[in-house]
Length: 76
Image: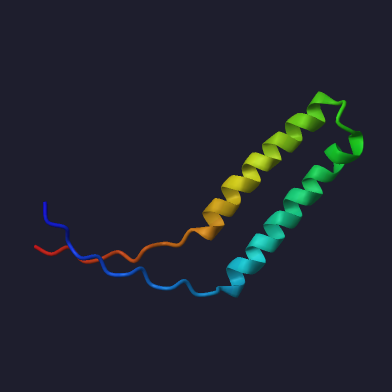
């Protein structure tokens, strides 16, 4: 099959608002994890909280890092 030429992806711009959102998100995760860290690793609730926060942090950073692609007009 013939391959169609692909245009290079546009360069990402630095968005200060997204950077601030990422910093505040990580601060919120750290403050939420502080009680579990202070309680020690022996408590099951603390470990479950840390595992849940790690999952939320990974998903949250993935979502904050992604960009919306502009919607192109369909050619008829």
